[in-house]
Length: 316
Image (cartoon, rainbow, N blue to C red; front, side):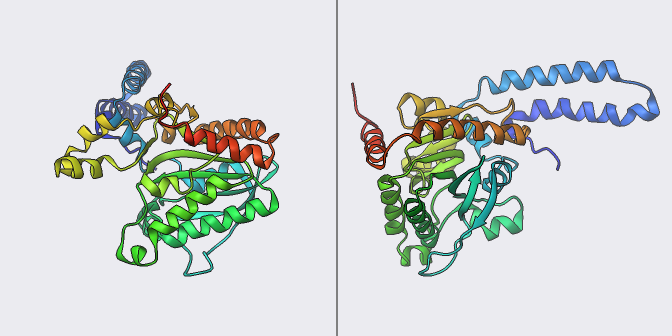
């Protein structure tokens, strides 16, 4: 798969293109090892400098990178014996939220998450990760099953927001989001939500009302997308960058406000540059967090989760 470079990565892309050109010429025009090594060193240094100084809009672009690992990648890399459950038993099956039973490093769990898709066909199938009411009702069904059998719930959040279409609204989108959020808050089993890309609005919180909320280093989490905020504030969606700079949507900001509990470092250049490494890092942190929660009773889990969310926004 060809590497997709973001707008702010163009200087890095130009160096990588020169490296590729020299590598292609080498078999017929002699060795360019010295030149390639120098360019590689320059590109690596530029990448380190760039990613050490990302502003919120740049992080937003990284969070939306089309080659970033998605839910199906985390399932393939972290879970075994995955059995997907379909449907909400009311209307149908929403493929924007996938979930089922699995084993996480030997431990039985319920796992679910938003799936955006990786090409045109799968993005249409999964509606770009924007769930309809039946997706959130499926999430409630999965959480009910987790509690019935005493299984931890692991969720992966990556959505621009819930689908705002007419049919979704007619079938009770707002209520479905509220019910899913409520069910997450009342679970008597450990639950961990990981924001892996975008965490947009109620569509994200519906499966992120968890005991612990984790966030990848270059993901974003907000009440509305930067484009949506710009449209409301200035009636100009092109000012999304201005909105992103003001909204405090990045991992460092959200850690400071205690909205998320832990930030998971990403490989240099973002999770898409070393997908296996990024997925393993998420797995290691999930394992550590599960161990911490496993000794708590159902009542302790509910109280700790309630205390966590009540503390958000509290001063002093």
